[in-house]
Length: 104
Image (cartoon, rainbow, N blue to C red):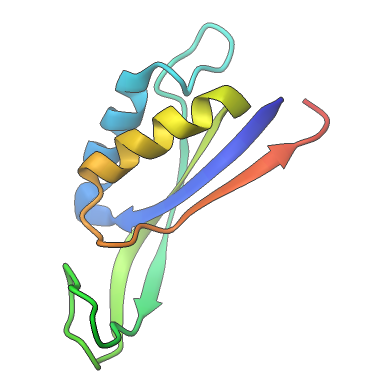
């Protein structure tokens, strides 16, 4: 089964993240590797007590220019891609969404 994995990351770390994912070899689409799609936007969050934010401070709402990176992969490749993301992602709690694709 094919999946779509989506992660948001500060723009400053987007290329690092894409490279780490590409090096896994799990983002292949046919005979192509390092496959992704990105859009830019603004991520917003409020670090709560106990948080150790990379950007911002506890108790203050933060807005960060981020990229939303989308990757197609197999169900079996999801865990490997998530592991690679966690190694290089600067956030304490990266937001990672995985969607099953039904017709591919």
